[in-house]
Image 1 (tube, rainbow, N blue to C red):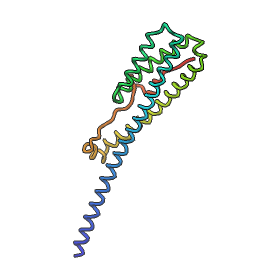
Image 2 (image 1 turned 135 degrees about the vertical axis):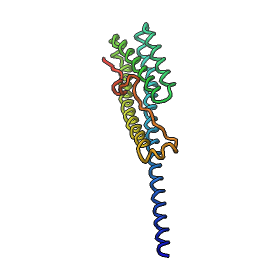
Image 3 (image 1 turned 90 degrees about the vertical axis):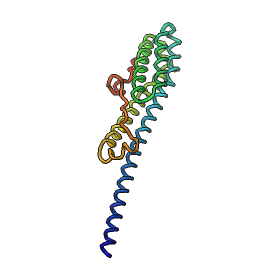
Image 4 (image 1 turned 120 degrees about the vertical axis):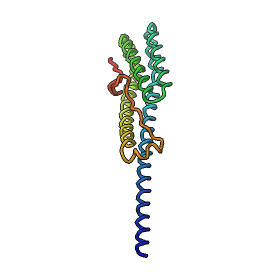
Length: 190
């Protein structure tokens, strides 16, 4: 009789251990997936903030550089592509295009000393620089979360559960040229 109870207790302990292990791994994978989603949300928030600043910046420059219509169109088109992009790679490519267009816009602004002295332009410039820094930080955090998540679903024991949970590898947020967004931030020289 004692052997039967000992056997039942051993089986119960094994079942509890397997259940605890399964729940622990599953919860860990879910937490990592949510971390990736939260960090992606931060990137989108900062990209939206930059996109919201651009019309004001363009308006400030337009007042001084009325004959530079081509660059204003390029900035508007790049902004629209960024707002319409889906997925990490598409957002990264659209962000690169917008950064390049903004760089050309700022180069034009350099030609107008009275614009560089305008207080609203200086404020917009500072806001844009701050936003670029926030984007760089958000991208770094997102890529760190993606790296941890991707490793967890590829390594044992996460690999045992990831497929059944519908978890797949996530893309890093990298520029289309292969350089990180931090290296791609537009330069503003005044």
